[in-house]
Length: 461
Image (tube, rainbow, N blue to C red):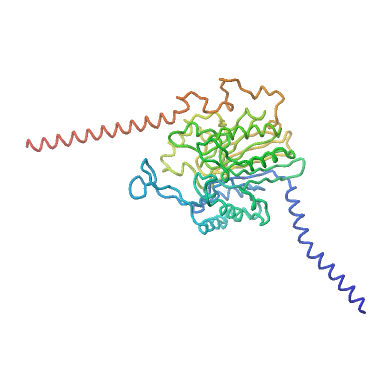
């Protein structure tokens, strides 16, 4: 009798252990099967002010992406003071005495992340879509900030909490939020590499480092690791566009072009890795754009910029003045922008809210890749169709080389353009400003003359 009870107790113990292990085994199995599922639709976006309406989630959900990638400014966590030219606290002008942007408290950052996460549209996206991401400056904690920002450790924890990163994730122990993922079956894998362009970045105008030594070492191992059909490198700031070279001194955009040595190192690393199928996705600039560079790896390197979910350059001015923004975008000389008949705007940029969409047709021969920027209704506004065959290094290297002094579209940087072309935005701006001042001076002189005549006439009367 005692032996039977013991046997029953042992049997019960075994059954209970199996029952407890089943959910764990199922969880591990489901995670593995999810990573092995064929991925054919990826959406991405950036620049989402948590306090602004976000109707674009409906269009993203209708696209039905299997993966959504945040590319930074997932919230606007810093505090922006208003423009003040005069007064006690002056935020602009040569006599500026306080910074325009200041960090907010940890509690306020948490509140803003919660507001985004509980947004009805975003909450619906989370139900069926795997969400991953990195950060940019405003969710890092301070506008245009780099490695000097003191609050970055706290900001890293808050971002990873927002992304539901596991507590034992290596991202919670390393300096920076860079990471990588691999999706799909072995012969149709997509590798997603997300860079951190904030945690280790040297000051602007320094031509120092963007990624820092540890992240460079990690990136080299990622690119030289097992091959994949496609490799998507996510950067919060634009990689290929070099607009910052031509918008100064009126304003400057953050981009890899501000760090020429770092960008050249990135291109060389991709070329040395012999990795095919690489392209970039980026955000930050508050407009959509597709650029390409043909003289780095033996095949075209594309950069699809989707910015932003709520923030857009045309929303920063009254609607009647949107034509000025579009004119400036069209006038800006760029040797890297993809221009084509599929663009909704003549400039082939899009200054209204937008998101990025990638579609891969694995059944086509060769496999095709559609890269798009879509509007708030989900309609394409910028588009490029390519194939895995076109994203492979060509045997004739001379095809993608350029001779000294030679100009070639998608190869010659904007800095090589004649100065009058490169700086025509600044020339136009200062000419317009001079005309405005002359007009004001003329009106003032006319008004003074009329007043004097009236006064003289009154005296005579």
